Image 1 (cartoon, helix red, strand yellow):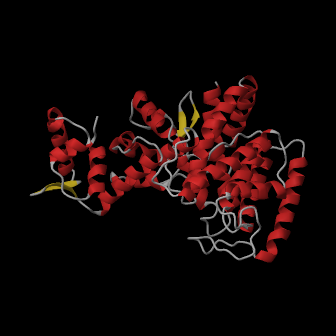
Image 2 (cartoon, rainbow, N blue to C red):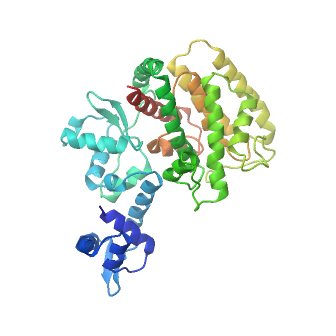
Image 3 (tube, rainbow, N blue to C red):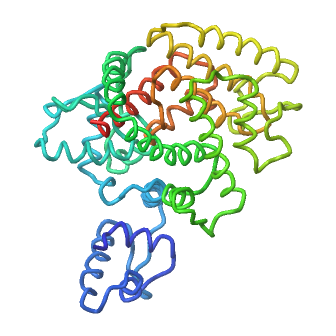
Length: 413
């Protein structure tokens, strides 16, 4: 069924006035369905999304309508049904949920079925974390997409402040559950890893400006269909990162420690579309695009700092038994230190994520993806931050880890 957002998106892209019949033809609607299309156009007009003039109906260009179009594009790029997500009642729910570090159905004036529907819509798209099923307890990580959606419908955004160890209890509980479930379902777990791999490739490279959408990433990597509307470099970037992740996964599953050589190899695989510096330590100074305050190592500092970091890593890896706090604290330190060293001309962040995932997986913490709703806070805690803040990044890691664990355990159960 054609919706008002479907028609708005089409008309926004066209820009020019359109007759109702032209809109009906675009959506392959017959004359019988003409009245339905016309009624939607009238509804859009009443909502000040389009205007009627002598030439037909035309989108109104203003700040609010531009925001709606950008939200629809965000959903399309990430394979989200915008007709379910961009909703006034859901926006009111999210605004209230932002105020709480964790919430249950009784915190809202909602019937359980509506609450479950909202949570299903958000959680399956990586925009909420279900912490417990009975009672259904959840949290919604802050991100600008949800903020914009809440603001679009006239709600005010305030966000609850998290404790430094907000999710340690849930992580510890889910890790024990995961270890038991995996031992009984190894083949199923490997299939889950394959599914998450594609999402991680899309999410990770979208942070680096790769324009390929999630649906097209799936077609490219799973169905071997190369989308024609993207550059060869964009396509190669996706294919090459998959090769690096496949190698990292194999190494982590066999519990091979990270080494200077393996890091260079991961970078060489991931950046093969740029052979002039793939797998090579940089010889020039670089700056972080969009964040000149982010301090990276001078060329003369790279190798000494890498050597010191790998010495600490080897000490960490050689320990027989580590607490969850010790693992997370070191993973955060390792991530931030490597990214601040920034040893390559390009591809540093995607390599940092890859080797940090390796570190966590060798400690039996199955981080397979950074879900959509946590990407922004992750960036703002790393290369988007003006000052290094390991505590903040640890909070983000906790959310990423508990989301992965809950999602994996649910599929293994």
